[in-house]
Length: 306
Ligand SMILES: [Zn+2]
Image 1 (cartoon, rainbow, N blue to C red):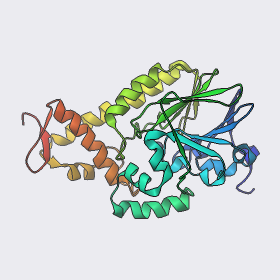
Image 2: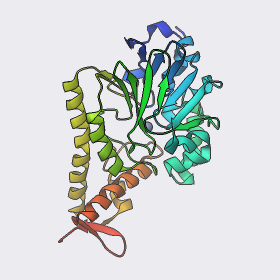
Image 3: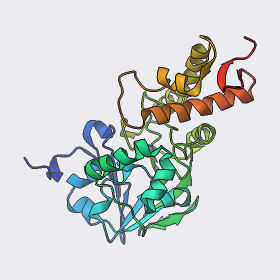
Image 4: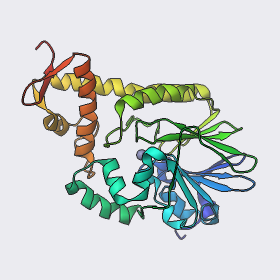
């Protein structure tokens, strides 16, 4: 069996929406491919690795709406040189150029250089200088079916949920409802925005939720609420764990990152130290603002009142 066997891939269909699940329901580095077939326009949401195995179901797309920009959501773009690519304006430069994507990640050159080689190889990475930006509330009429963008930043500055109407099917992207929890480890990520967006996501009117990774499709409101609550609770668990780490005495950001707040000790991905530092720094900022942590002149952090 060759790598292009479109008929054997597991899918979920509802009205105009088809989800082609990636490996392990789209566990990173793969993802789940959403295809929306309107009377006039065939649209795809993001382009994960699995897009490369779908044949005409994917390759005939007229329109790509990116829920956000990250390497694992751009892996099928190279197949659609003539399709219109649209992305929220806050992620637009990241889609248009490597320089934009570099600023989006915010990693140092020692990470960015090998990362670029890796994503060109593993994710067919190519910038899309022709990509166009949209704003919160943008609507696409595909013919008998509409897509509406809800800007819910935090994971990236331009992260959006894409709602298929009137069916009420929400592509929630990297609100992946995974046991890892929220990711806000890049330069353009924001923990504060993530917290706000989680509350808005809970209130969004939908009857089915599709994640880019892990969960796939959830069609029960109660199950979605439970999964979202557990996912959001990871933020409090990380904060509690960081306070525990700080109870050992004053430590720098680099020292805290080395001890690992988010990732297992044996994880080796290129960006992990950067993501740890960026994530921990945002939790520290919250704790500093709340007066629960203080920093000394050497920028070592300790619990307030110790
Ligand atoms: Zn992402």
